[in-house]
Amino acid sequence: MPYHALDYYRLDEQLTEEERMIRDAVRSWVSDRVIPKIDEAFRDHFFPQEWIPEMAELGLFGPTLPEEYGGAGIGDIAYGLAMQELERGDSGIRSFASVQSALVMYPIYTWGSEEQKRNLLPKLARAELIGAFGLTEPDAGSDPGSMLTTATKVDGGYRLNGAKMWITNSTIADILVVWAKLDGVVNGFLVEKGADGLTCPETTGKWSLRASVTGEIVMQDVFVPEEMRMPDANGLKCPLMCLNQARYGITWGVLGAAQACFDSSLQYALSRPQWGKPIAGFQAVQEKLVHMATEITKGQLLCYRLGQMKQNGTSSFRQVSMAKGNNCRVALEIARIARDIHGANGITDEYPIMRHMMNLESVYTYEGTDTMHTLIVGSDLTGLEAYKG
View 1 (cartoon, rainbow, N blue to C red):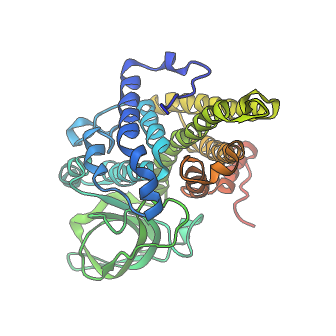
View 2: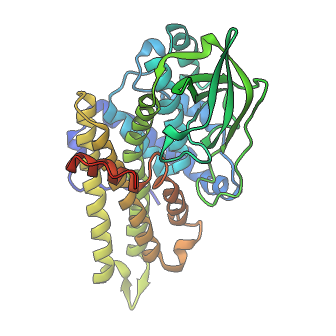
């Protein structure tokens, strides 16, 4: 059945013509190209790579960057709306765009040399190059400052040693943004596919994000030329700023998954008969639908206001944490309520519910767990950090 987006507080009226146009273009692409194939991709555990150039054609890679570097120069609200529509299709599709834009192109644009920017960003925008972001390690997740990956200065460049895991796109990436400690300080390096000593094994056996490529980055004396170190990427704040960019996209994205679950639930409830009438006519089901719609609407308003502040440069990473934590939490709750409304049918791939639910279990914890985002906001409210002990 056709998709009907929930807009209970008429947020559309607040959007510019350009923002609506960008959202509608991505919405149509998702409906036409992603929805018909996503269940097969999820079931068989593969990412349809024919979608990559199509996403590039839509301008989904680095869209907020200036046009001189291959971007489209659009605003943060338009970018968020695009991420919402991609995740309505699947979290794995939005994750691909988030990594390419927020975790690869953003750091190159922000801390890279002019040569790096002009050489790499347009190619990444056109998807001639695929990128990946290497920060998380087997024993360094919520505490990235404890990373063990090191860079040692040698003639002409650096030697990198260490391992990263849970890396989206690692097995198909042409360029890896890798964070390593150089003389005890976190620095950013650009590692090219095929480098001696570099391996990127795929992570298998996932029950979540199955239509997404996940792997590791293993480096044994990998040589990185001097010109491939990002000269201004010094300090832990740099990868954390990248994560903040990605988290912003997630706050919008998960609402797309929630919208898909709500729309399926509403249509199902209106068509499923019991005791002589649709189950939508029963109080318990209506209560569930109203709760879902209310949480989506609150999430939309949270995103929109955050987008406004981000566009005018007044948002903080703490506000992004509040939005990411809240919206992931309610999206997962909505998926679970949707499964209940669909009954036994909710566990089949005839409906998108279980796929979104399993994906959201990952999104709930990646780019910062719910607990970490709670503590970030808590420290801001109280002035007391509770991260340790």
